[in-house]
Length: 422
Image (tube, rainbow, N blue to C red; front, side):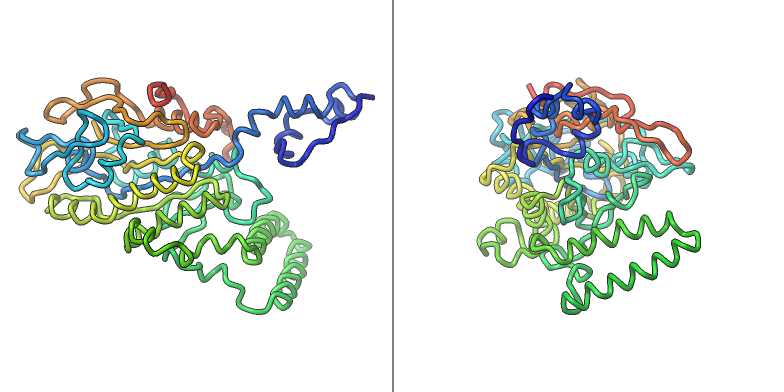
């Protein structure tokens, strides 16, 4: 039998090795552990990869953010400013982002058909149109299912604000929701001494076993996984990642003393600790009226927070393995309406990406002079999702069986936007 070399746990992910290599091959010596390490080399590269989604709920106007059209009939009064990318301009209220834009790739040619908030938000989180017969997994759940360490004590997916759930992938990848970023969530604090807490868990286990004996085995199995994971988090030192109090005041001020600013700082702390996916939600972007005043106020929160997040990740050497995506469910119309607002417009809108192997300092695609259509290099939602998967080394074609027995891919269709990584 082949002599097996010494292998440390960090050399490969045990769960995926066992899935990929037949046990009989190891037992007979047909494959040695050195071969297993080579087989699983790609898994080693994935370790530590994560994503932060900055979600602009309501549909951010491209004209007042990343694709301004000053001087045009529909451009409105918003001025454009120069950025760290020569010849590329942003709307005037994004001065902090403009200074670090060389770390971003802007996609100005996103295009879609869904103009309803609920349907478009669902699609931009899952890659699928809503269906009454199935709850599709969010992209965050699909990413966590492939990347997260099942032994890690914190949830693999955290959302600062409500978001789309894990669908049929189940409770293991359901987002842990944070309502007040920067504070230790109340539901992870141990309410009693540790010994008493463990005794309560033991009593709960007895009650569940009695319930299982009476026919509730599947329900109990789900509860056990959830409680086991919750108790690990409650008793873990890593739970301190949720508390930003020990961060320097100067850094907290750079992020901004807003919920979104604290959420972005929390996101950095969480991915630094090992969380796979963090979403930070900014609300109020459904600007059917008073768009210019409202986006000015929104930018005062999002501009410093998002730009500082990318800088902070870069300074700590985390940006190469952390993908940051800024987007919403659609854009806004090229025409300003009678209420001084813009209406829903999925035909062309913008998104921004940084880190995770994305080449910064460039613009992908473009809109027409009046912003009414894609002028070149259209990017669909599946294209964007495939690009996210490429960045994180996640298989976009991996299939899961829905509760109805139908195989469903992480991303159905689409291609990687190769220019993002060139």
